[in-house]
Image 1 (tube, rainbow, N blue to C red):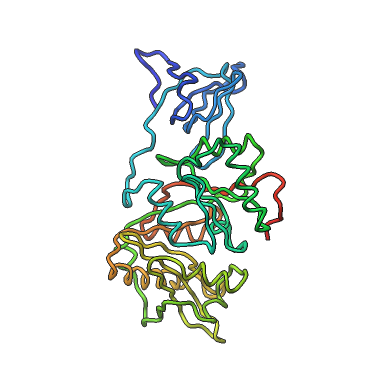
Image 2: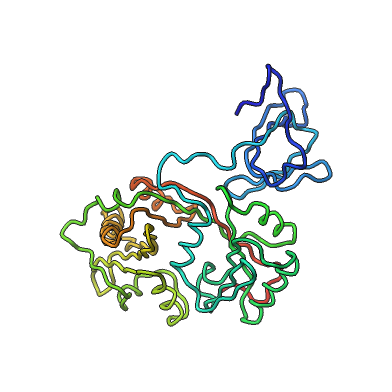
Length: 337
């Protein structure tokens, strides 16, 4: 990152740049002998009492004393993507929300409050795409009351790392004691390369609803009726199964087709049968069906510590688009189960 003008380091930032993506250079160790430069890129979320707070792409926050700054400037709001379909954060957030519908929802301005008897955080959290129509503290109080009435902890789903994501909201939540519990990444890629894979012997079968065998392999457990309603929600849902011994599938997967998008989830393989191409075969079969329905782009969500899944998705041409997080209200009305 170039900070110089005519050979001089320049600090071209002010408090008026809060909310913008910035790049700053600072001296470590307070400028003591042997100190080194460190660069930080992210969204400037506050500049108060001589301290800058910058949220990086992965949602982590860096606090930088103003006195340590040697250079800084505003940079483009999001780097150009090198591969994968172009998409805004809001488009992907809405597509993902339609693919995993709650049992109950209510609007609070541009926020959607979602509940599904506690089955997964995604279906039991607020999706804040815009203005809640109230001052933030009042909106958060309303959120906590709504979930409290249902015996659920209050969660808000946010995102960082792309144009239009919610670094400022994340900082506001953290300042109010909300705790970031879970983070994962949204990845996107072209659908055709996924469909070009192989399914030796045509082992994968597709159906519109998960049968008992499919549910037996599925790792997420919850209220069976509610789980089934969430799993089968979405514009066009498909379930993939690779038969296994004892009536339990060797592998399963789920795909939701929504316009140009195909969303993959619940790709699970018997631990004793991994590295045999079963996950790839499941995704190939689902991708081919999605292509037949007119989709051309794909998305999926992957946790940061799932190295096997990340390696598979990279081979299939996927790349990270943004990181999303679930923030829990302080002193929740009920423990998460």
